[in-house]
Length: 126
Image: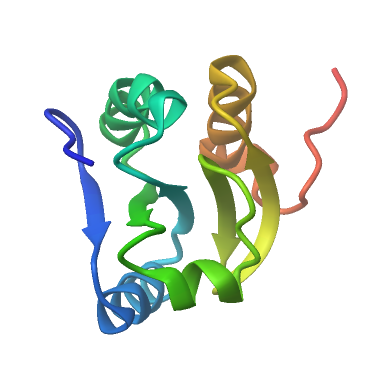
């Protein structure tokens, strides 16, 4: 999957995955991991938004994993449908979103990027 804009790291090896997770951990960043496939129409439709979010929220690390090229990694994360988005802190899952729900993806990413919500997994009620 190609991203014409943004700062999305395309992961094509297990080492690349480990490096991205480790770098995010060292920098105190949350990882947004997009498990997708080149043949998946919903994956292609949400790719431009994903790229835009990577520019809008530089405090997060955005990666994408092709499930066909990285079957073992996809299986270890129990990816059953594409796209599946995982939100990770220190390599551990904070949240998950299955499907190309633009509104929900944007809400989850915006909440994680907001430093006031970083201390807990839930956004405070206002």
